[in-house]
Amino acid sequence: MPIIGNRVPPGPKGLPIVGSAFDLRDDPLNSMRRMAREYGDVVRFHVMNRERILLNDPELIHQVLVMQQSKFHKSELTRRITVRMLGQGLLISEGDFWRRQRRLVQPAFHRMRVNDYAAPMLELAEAHMGDWRDGDRRNMSEEMMALTLGIAVRTLFGSELPVGAADVGRAMTFLMRYSLRRQRAPVRIPETWPTPKNRRANRELAFVDSLVYRIISERQASGNGNHNDLLALLMSAMDEDGSQMTRQQLHDEAMTLFIAGHETTAQMLSWTWYALGENPAAEASLYAELCSVLGGRALTLADLAQLPYLRAVMNEVLRLFPPAYIMARENVEPVELGGYEFAPGTTILFSQWVTHRDPRSFADPDAFRPERWLDGLEDRLPRCAYFPFGAGPRRCLGEGFALLEAATVIATIARRFSFRLLPGHSVIPEPLVTLRQRSGIHVQLHAR
Ligand code: HEM
Image (tube, rainbow, N blue to C red; front, side, top):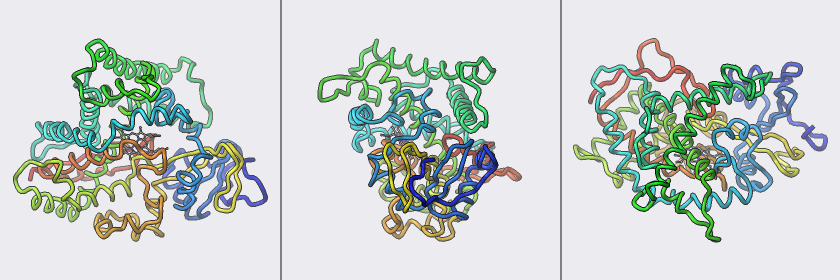
């Protein structure tokens, strides 16, 4: 029993043994929102006899991520879902090892360096529209995945993808569904059993792994000297004691940046086209801003600072459709939160999906209204009421990179095309490791 003392947070009783497992498996987003509505800021529920705590108060989330962060680790849950793909990469490593790696990788994400990537981002976004024609029907989820993969490979590895983007995309999608379904399944079959799904997971993992290793090997063979990409920085990064990353560490960090670096941004962009397609007034305002700032000339890095409506659209997309829609921590020592005491090892969850739609922080919370960001809302919000990139020392390392990429891609594409969802196609959020769309976003393109 992870609760210490007499006070126990309220929460659903759920079914015997399985607890709330089926509700969460079938519809995690609405289940969490319902729990927050019905039980308040600290909710206790069970999944397969294991207790979980859901925090819905921004101040308590801030306590976990910032004020009392040293008492928490990433949760076992997160590690189990990601460890096979990411090894000891930054996203899940802990303690001194994490600190060292973060110190080594961080310079690669310095604003000045990240700005260097604006040119390839622009070029690839332009090139991606090369075969788009007025009236075409496209699945924007696939389009954005292919584009962000291309950008990740170019900026990370300075090369083109050695195989088709579609193959990598398919492998990633399978691996995410596989890890998450395993995690959510009431009964877990060991990974070593040769079931068809386990065998395919091994194949897909070996395929993605071999790609990353191949790129590292080619670079090691050809020399790092004349490259100016993230891999070159990782390979030459040196700690104060003169040590560098091993091949395994390089692999884990490159894989982490590769996956973290394209998957989340692809989802953000896909949701942008959905939101704009459903909200023609917002789409028109964005287009008007792009025309007035850019006229007929090409977009440059400097222009992005002059596009407040674009920034508001991005904020609003990250609010309503946060690619990282849930986070988890486990306390490594006793901790007090909201008047409750938790014993070490308690799994504590908080969800951007829930918090970003809380009417206490956002009026008319389910509506897509970029205008709400135009008058300084971000500065007035309570801490951690809006946290698409997390908070505290483990805050997203790639935030600047992601925002630059998203702004560049949205501005480039929205100048040339508008989108309408195909009639009868409903877009359903699919909360996998990131917030995806169950059957894509199928639109018709309209050339400007
Ligand atoms: C819209 C895009 C993105 C979103 C919403 C996002 C969100 C997040 C969040 C919420 C975390 C914190 C996780 C936690 O504390 O448990 C995180 C961590 C991280 N992100 Fe991102 N991310 C995005 C893009 C990127 C990109 C483009 C990169 C790299 C190129 C990246 C690399 C990382 C890394 C390395 C960490 C781990 C940092 C650490 O623990 O030290 N992310 N991200």
